[in-house]
Image 1 (tube, rainbow, N blue to C red):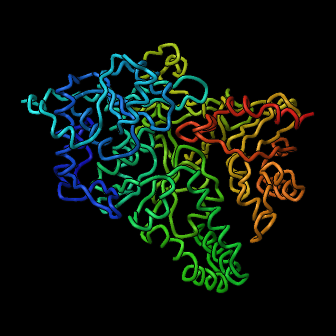
Image 2: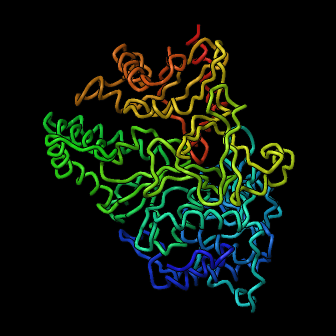
Image 3: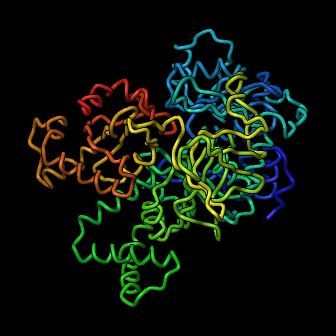
Length: 586
């Protein structure tokens, strides 16, 4: 492996990888029913074509280039072209509203806007006609054929490590998105911080479905794998994840807890439909695998159960994921300890990490030889994490403060908001509550902005409780409330397919049964009450959910209840369902 010290900008990192791994496959895309692969050398040609085209359109060092696109080869080529030119890449999500696109384009001061399709360009222009931005398509063939691309005779001077590489706009859960200003040095420090952890090699392959517009997908997957000479298959869509996994046969998976929760619930549901003997093997095998992972010796009967479970069940589950998946990396939100143990027991090692857009994003991560399930690992090299215990009323818990070369320069054009998130000595105030144990492992316990006080003065962090509730196959989503109230309540989005199965089994549902009618059935309420009791049995007494309301409409990006990174927009949910929540206190 080449030395990790011979590059200091993202452009240099990519040039190094292109030279080292030229004939190796980099990006895989599915076309006409089959997967085709572009090598590092071929991708370098695409980057050079993009660089010439952008230069022809007047893009120079420091200019901002916005892009609206899902993960594509063109997205990556445009990004590395910008890094080489010293331009600032500003990615957006296709799922964002036209209003948010227009805001980000204006706020960033973009010179060029790249759109994945002509339809996206039309939608943008209808909302923001006559803007100063130059609108371009992202089709690689168009750029290769552009008549002016040969006008750039010499490469412009390369950017310095302190130049800005990108603006990563936050999801905007509490207002307009803020542009996180990240330099080349910020992101490179993150990449170098994980290079020596022994997690990824050039033989690895991922299936990419986390958006690269998000900091985790951007740094951890795209840059991290490109730096190591690994391969990235670009998922056709969220609904195709399972089938694409079987086709691509990845060795590593980058995902958020929501994906792992779906795996957990899906396998559990399948096992419930199996004969009792298979269920007995499955549960016994899981228990034995968890015990073995903790380093405990197994009794003979436990070894037999584990062997049978591995041959009959676990190996088949792994084959659904392609049969080669050896590790899964989880981030962006806290992963349930139960789910982490479950995935681990199936033979897929789980490594959970922690970070924020403002920290490029990696702060800490579990890695081989240094792993403790239920935590987000230890800080990576060069990063220091301390606790401000004044932010919490519980001993040993506080706000996580981050110091290191990965910390952002600030929020674009928001000096007051930038100043508010830094300590006098330059530490970044994350807004996250956590603990640090004696071995240096960090645990996330909540979000300061989300926590609230009950009438009794006790603080509640709702997100961990919500994640626990979503482990039920009956619960598609949940929001826990209780600010200035005597107790916690929950708004529960029911998984209607699971509800129908609970009521009717394999029998067809009687025509005319609306979701509201099904959810009003007393048996359904009892089933949800039992699930809530089971899943929250370990939380503090004052955090328990005393009452709940059931709804059928899920929280989605389209209805404004979720951000593009699937975080809950609590104020939007309250605006829509506040009256139902208040009824629970009547």
